[in-house]
Length: 70
Image 1: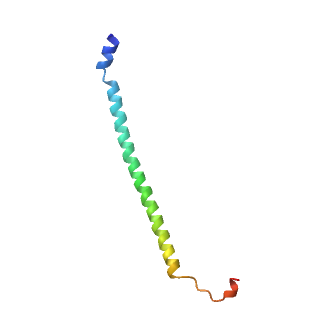
Image 2: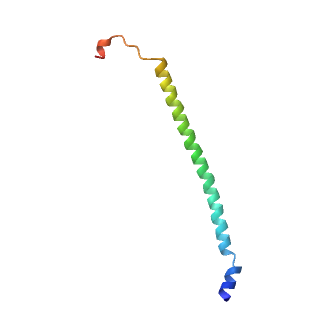
Image 3: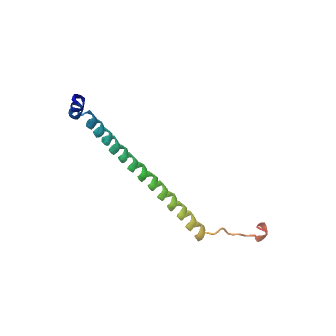
């Protein structure tokens, strides 16, 4: 019974939980930044592809001689 009583007054488990929680908060912040960077990169790639497609539609290649294709 003495062991149980001393364990209940021991604050080490609570300190460990608080440290783990603090570490998780830091990791969560880092993951939020990584998600933001990935999202931004994906958006930039989509916009670039859309711009390339729009330019291709607006400026089709000029064919001088159809026999070179066939």
